[in-house]
Length: 432
Image (cartoon, rainbow, N blue to C red; front, side):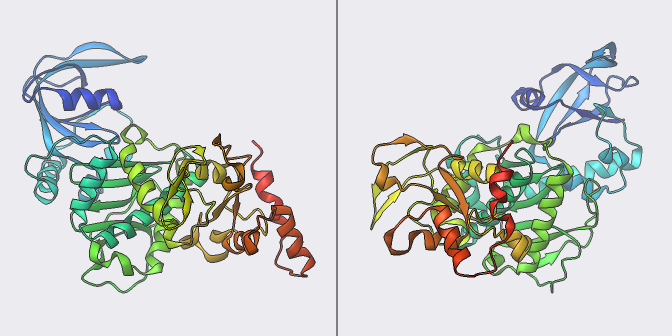
């Protein structure tokens, strides 16, 4: 009989992956009626289905937290070459009730579900496994870059994917700072928002999860997955689109709009991602480097835009012109505090242009670093303000650095009716 055993967070994940191949695991929670010889599949939230094992001792009563439970020793523990994502199993077994109620630490599926689960795990290894696949260092941006460039050798296509990933992250964390998580695998990367995957990259393909209906014409390179069962964790229908990496530079805006719509819905549905334990800082650092260094989605980067570096500003480097090293973390904190609307005119890209532009905004440094000279610790709330590109350009016209208030007065005195009352809303939103 097959048993599904569930680990509890990062500690149990490490116990499983560090286990000597074929070795034992002590005191694991199992169903009361488990018997020695039962096969087991091991699942850890945020990591997926990780290993197979065998129940080797008669269950003994114990406490699990403040609840009664039974524990057994497991033997013959064998990690799967590639962890199988929960979402993949959801696609293959859309009617399996346990997938919708993952609150118990153990489960005994019926014979048919057990058979289909075994087939899904085997199929995933065939589709995504690689010889010698191993656990990767999720903190290392170099490891992340190596894997991502293997998955997508075309530099332009990879940059496009990175921009989509970064946009989704910024939209998610503008709604709830801990609503998102990105996981690096030995053969791919997945961005989760709330309880669901929203974006993936595997060998030669990107996967976009979208609110339905997307309503674009499918092609061989951009197509929906016909047997996709949808998500139960978010309201409304969803679609899963498979995109060849070569098609990423010309991806239709409608697909991206519906993708960002799902990101927003997922972030609002679950403001603390249950997968945060699997966060891969190396991927985040890599995305900051390639997207921050190139400008956000190709937009013009002004000399005082926030670029990669750290929160200590003022360190100059010489290229064709002087540039300033800045940290995307300062930008993130600024936008998180004030919101993504312009401090001068109140424009919010997402409200004006829809989900495809959600979260896009320049960040203006109130006093140019060139006038400060010596290094100092930047305060993202006191020293930075979100501004739209038009207002940002006016701030710097003629080589000057006009104040937010001065440019706002220019709008008012010009008789432009575009300046809305919510121009000061960013300040209000910043008060916690």
